Length: 177
Image 1 (tube, rainbow, N blue to C red):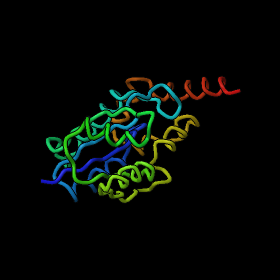
Image 2: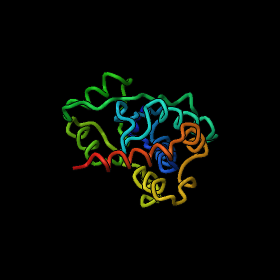
Image 3: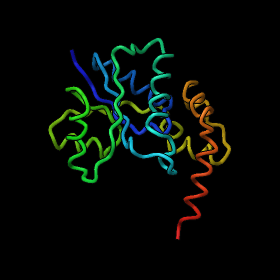
Image 4: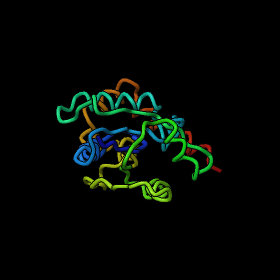
């Protein structure tokens, strides 16, 4: 039985993440989904809380008939102040795993340094399917809902997430010197 680790910030959870999870399941039997930077929220790069991101992921997986939720585990993992210790923090918080799935080069590098296998999921339409691009579209009032799951849309709507993204951008802009 093989187990993989899929790491992301999921700010917000989008269709590229679903595609990466399906890709991971072609390689492993079980998948641990790590919500990275789980301590971060209410800032322009990380507007959503770990709990909100967890809801986006869980609700999206539950609604997708091609994903067996019994074979997934979602674990929030905070950042550490020392990059070299972060992978060890992950290891303390999740069950044993065989491979890490990430498209973040730096995250991959940290695991490769420890001789842990890293696989990059094939990126689906990366220009549009990125949290940064989706948040930019929210700010600029450009259509973004087609880039996320229906369940992510519902979570964002319930928490007034678009307004939060706009407010945080304005606040951070005012605080710059």
